[in-house]
Amino acid sequence: MSQQPDIIQTLLNSAGEGDKVFGSETEAADYNWASPSYLTPTQTERLNAFLAEAAESVSKALEQFLRIDITLTSADPTHHFGEKLRAEQVETDLFSVGLVDAQGTQLGFVALAGQAVNEWMAKLLGGSQIDLTDGTELSPVEQALLMDLFSVVNQSFWDTTPPAFRPKLTLEKAIIKGSFPLDPEFMGSYCRMDLNPAEGEAKPVASLVLASDLIEAVANGNGQAEIRRERPGDKARLRGHAENIMIQTTVSLGTVQVSMRDLVSLQTGDVLLINRQVEEPIELQINGETIFIGSAVQSDGRCAIQISAAVDAKLAANNNK
Image 1 (tube, one colour):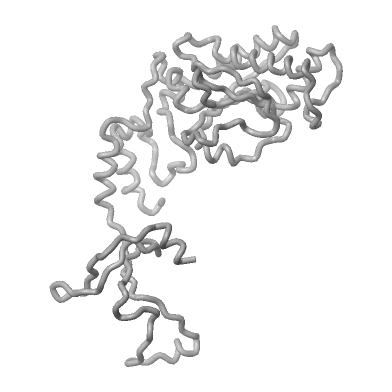
Image 2: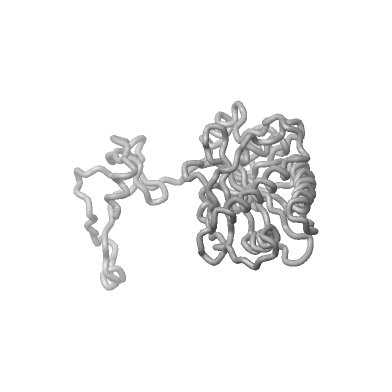
């Protein structure tokens, strides 16, 4: 991919206002294709400013709720494809609660680290030493207090933003341990926003993960969801460039297995029989996969293939096994 940066950069820029979307310093060879690029530098700056305020707001809310001194700082937001995030290894002591919209669609979650949960719950329960990560089932009192903690974090996270900026989501009632409560049907990307302790190990004690579309209002700074992965004409522009990219194709007459002894003994005039009858069609392949079949013909004195049919991809894959 990095061997043809000009082609890739052309595709990036063809999506309309390319430099404004991806940043003028984005080089195709260095582009992170494993992570969705969702925000412009300006939007990222706004989001970081919001997260700094959110960390302060959550810190104050937890101080009031727990009656302890606590200071949290925000980490840079990260963006993840849903499929990749669902496949990530999750720490077993992580507690999380899903976030759903008015239609019940799961669009993110709030997560709390197990060590922090133990410390905070011990404070709420009068200083008793507890370990909610030991695999035992939560008591009704523990579950109610833990849900209160999730509510405090989730609500205070958005306290510094105008109502129009806040995603209209509510916490689910189930507390999940050791996994991310992500909808397997959701194929979009997520934005992960972590809050870390100001001192000590830089490991998140609280995280908010939302479908990337839901942070548009904050990133735009105007309360309106204007970011779109697809703008009018995007597909047509990309298709126009893609249609002009040259693709190496192969016309396959067939294959033959030859022993090393026979191979080194080949001489001019020898004949090799391939695994195809004369009347059988030949194949047009891309990257080793057959996409069309046809017959050998000649045109203007050159060898050619006359396409007779397209090949079903699933059938071709089964035949190649």
